[in-house]
Amino acid sequence: MHTSSRLIAFACVVATLLLTGCHATVDARWASSDDTVDHWKKAMPNLPVEVRGALPGTTHEQIAQAIPNAKVMSTHDVDPTAARLVVELGQRATPRDDAYCAAPASAIAAGNAPAQQTMTLTICDGARLVATSSRPIDPAKASVPELASRVASLKKLALIGISREQIDAYQIQG
Image (cartoon, rainbow, N blue to C red; front, side, top):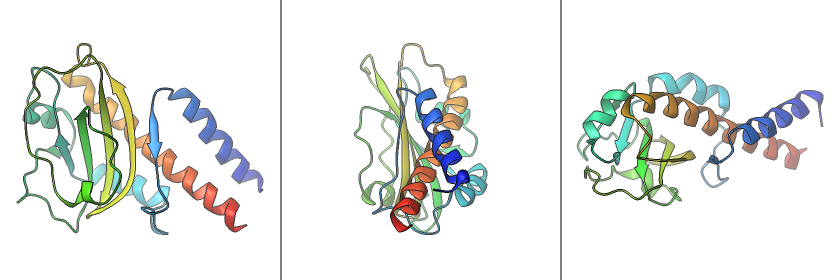
């Protein structure tokens, strides 16, 4: 293993330890050779952000106003060939396949939320799921203005997941 590969691997381990309680997933079924950290890091600041779910006492629209490039998307707003980020607040399971990116979820306001929710960020390349990252969130303590910083943290975690996939591929190939 090259020194630079070791440094990247070490940085990933340290970052993962610092982000305890968080999770990033990149699956070999999802990732392609174009899914590099550099590609997505450059693309992320300009990608539209689809908002799904909400915190108790808030609406999708309020959440979308707090997150840069975000909006509540209907079926008519989504271009199935365009890359985007999906930010979801709720109890749903982690996205597991391309069906998650194929169409937006219905815009239903949050009712009585449980004590613990999950905030999930998904990178969608059109209808193709690339990577996900998630973090537990306490809806009683979470505020709408802090959601932008939470999204920024989840973006970094998703990039770490992509870099780990690249390291694994490098170690397998040689």
